[in-house]
Amino acid sequence: MNPTTVHVYSKQNDKQLQQKTECSTLMSLAYELFDFILIYLSPCDIVESLTISVYAKTDRLADLEEFISAPNHVQIQAIGDRRYEQGMYNTAKLLYNNISNYARLAATLGDFQGAVDRAHQANSIKTWKDICFICIDKNEFRLAQMCGIQIVVYAEELEELINYD
Image 1 (cartoon, helix red, strand yellow):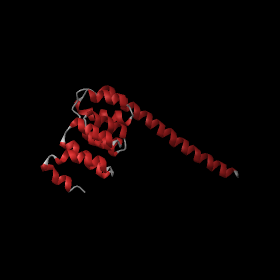
Image 2 (cartoon, helix red, strand yellow):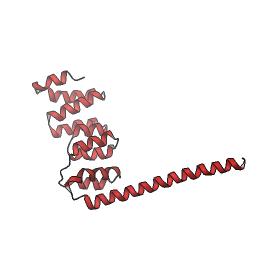
Image 3 (tube, helix red, strand yellow):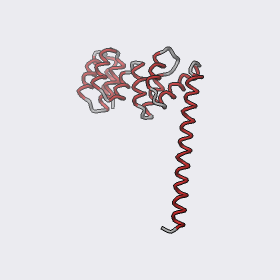
């Protein structure tokens, strides 16, 4: 290597090192901001959704579980749906479990047999339909049949079941 090549190579490494340092600094500032939000703003009703988001993004699931088990005014279903879409399945699972949304919980876990078992516990026609449709989408036809048997009893629900694509 000639001296010019070495100089350019070392400058390139300096830029990469500088970018890594800047990224690391930004991440530490973000975590400090999250901690500030959690400590000082958690009691406010307005920021409850933000608090859940912060717990989710910082992977503080134990704190999240404790927070949602206390009385709050958060739209847990909507937040769970957002976390599911973002691929944060552990957080979504925790939120769906909290509100007993067994159909979405089954989609999150991929445990369709468990979802059917929970549908027995819930004994809700909406839960049965949701789990049935998810099982159909995932080609779990035996489990969809088990759900369908529970739905057939309600004549007014048959049309939606028959016409499902």
